Image (cartoon, rainbow, N blue to C red; front, side, top):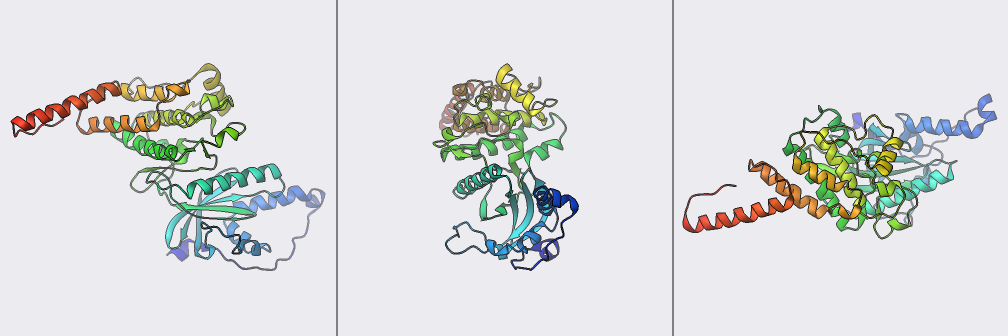
Length: 374
């Protein structure tokens, strides 16, 4: 069945006759070449064509070029494309008899600046992903780096992105239990990421993936960096609708930019809407950075969640909580929901309630066999 659905990558060299140049290509050969390269990259046969090309020997990495993460391309089968970006395509695949996602990045031959940027992002993503191991971080499997294409192989997340999931829902339709479950997955993944000294810099619903069990994993580390090295970065990173104001303004920033983005994602979970809908990304960025605008919180939003969202997207980074605190709060909220209790208005109130309840349970257990439930 796999052989019917997936096409094997064929690592062989074939001699091809040069295509005759049309009159238009003779006038502008560079433009024609770029168009042909893009069409080949987008075609269903793109990878067979690239790997069967006259430059195929460049894919046969020598022992000196091989990294511990270098993919064995003879074990890789490519299926249908299911997502795409400006310079990348993501395909379903099978690698060593395991379902995977294969991110293919096309490196342009003519644009040196773009080529350098894409290569830097690829190196960063592989370097970070290959050292991250957590149930809420997408699992890295292998990669290959041979122009004109780089690829990154990760576990396959069958339910797509969180944004795709929310697009299918009616506005404000997620239950508090579901919101907390998804938010906990995201915050736990981010807590681990920050514990490793990594700033994601592009946390958004499109970079959060869902598996068969509807668990969320943080993905796409192309713009991520180590916190100790982020200060050397120039310009802003990420996506305007989710970007912290200090990053929009290209001011110095810390890992609290990810907390701001998480606040926007938590708003998405409570509303199922796209943040700053009706605005262009640039308009949203201007509104956030210059007008201190934020997406409107619905009137029926749980006060506890609304309070957490507001703290996360505070204009002052020092007032934003860290992910250790966020995980703690969400876990306590989750316990309240499971116990059938309303969410408290503040974390301190919740902590006090838990302490009193535990002491009350202890007193009862010493004097009675009657069970006590929260």
